Length: 236
Image 1 (tube, rainbow, N blue to C red):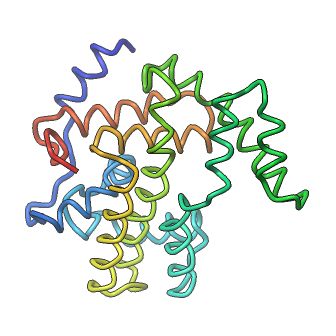
Image 2 (cartoon, one colour):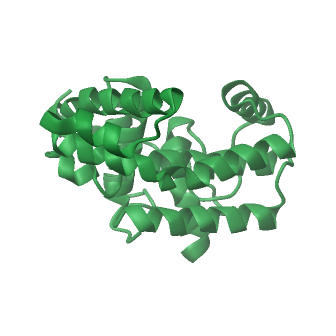
């Protein structure tokens, strides 16, 4: 599908919105979950997702292996802090200097064989993913990813999972509000706009799932261009 038709379809796609939606800062925080929410056809603008409890339960248990409050808190904290891994910065440095990537990784990564292999696999995955994103016109150059990384992917999933855990009773409303505020604050450390958020979300998903990002790109264009989208022309 051409970029023209993607944007055209994005303008007229029906978005799922709660009539009693949030406003102001509370809405800003919920919008961290917007990419994942749009994937699931969930509400974009409220703590409630608008999904059936059976659908939420299946998503949380089968995809995230979250069965109780302890499980929820563990994965939510992990997602919130996942982009703080200092070793990932050296993987990005290696990507900038591919002729010396091996020396850069060996000099800066953990010597433990298992840990080193983890980051080496990440380097290889990024090496394959970045050209695909350039070809798909998600980015024009690797430098666009240096700061944002896959923060939108980690924090976007975190925010939506928190909303689901709230509806299942694993989090109170106050805990949900506090957590969503933390995801919004964390996202602003990496991304300067909602467009950068969508790019980092697509980037993270492509690392996890490989090429063929057309669906994610269409979702991003819908959120950024649809007149009814709460993200359109909105500052992060």
